[in-house]
Image 1: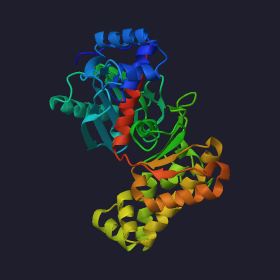
Image 2 (image 1 turned 60 degrees about the vertical axis):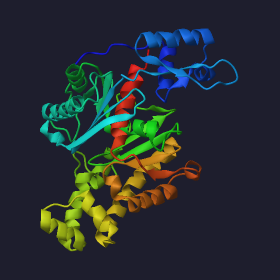
Image 3 (image 1 turned 180 degrees about the horizontal axis):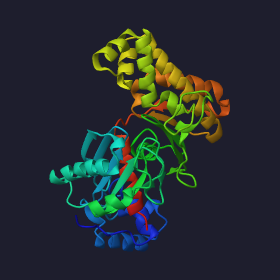
Image 4 (image 1 turned 90 degrees about the horizontal axis):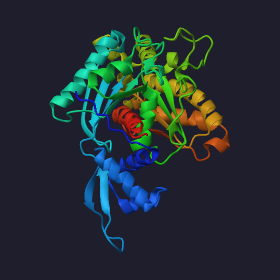
Length: 394
């Protein structure tokens, strides 16, 4: 694929591109929100058109004088988002305004290693290319379900990703697709997705808690992801909640993830089924040999006491950790997402109860704790937001 190299030449052009990412505007409207003279603004916009990053888009409605011309991002701009989870891959391609033009997903097994999984992801991108969604890409964002060195674009000792340690994911994807690439952990890109198109669109400081195969937290401060010094900020799944708890995938005992990650929930659900504590789960275990988080959700929806108990116990432990985070960080919003979060309002009610009871009243007085409404699109939208932020920078 041909490499697209056009980038803004200065901070003014980058700021204009980020404004246009939210939709085309007239030159007069842009002049209202940028700190540039009208002549300097027109010079920068004309240069963006010359670079192929933007184009003229007719005339705007009159504001009492001469009609101003409209400008929009180039309709040829294309970004790809690749959201790799422990058990699935989602791939989407968007235009410059991050509107999804094509979206595909498949089951995967992260334990098969980087060569197999990345090849599967690239095949999905290739299918979207064959479908005519794009001919070349301006950039690709990738999310991985483990700790990532953001500066290097590599996973670092990821507990549930054997064979991935320091694998050159960013370099591999960039070379294969012929464009810029950025890599972050899956929770951070979900938080970016919520910031761009979800419940956090108008919130500058919030937490996104993902409960899936693993548990993590995306931290957004002043509208930007906070990653910490080395990129490991928000790894709350490995906060210890019980010194004598079960062994976690990270090798320690009693981690939150060892109690309520996807594998832990399946383990506990099977135990409840075998003990006779849940007729529904016992039936599923007998029929399929396994029980899943989806089975627990279905059982709870039918009023199964054993399943409801599992959800409440997990929600209580998540709430305990989250209460400490809320008192420390004082966010304006907490969003709960991920596959296990589809357990729904029983889980949400338990988390809310613990957080509101245990956190400082000043921190929780106006704090919404809500379930994500983006479903499977939060990750891919966040991934394209990540790479577009990079491309639309000087």
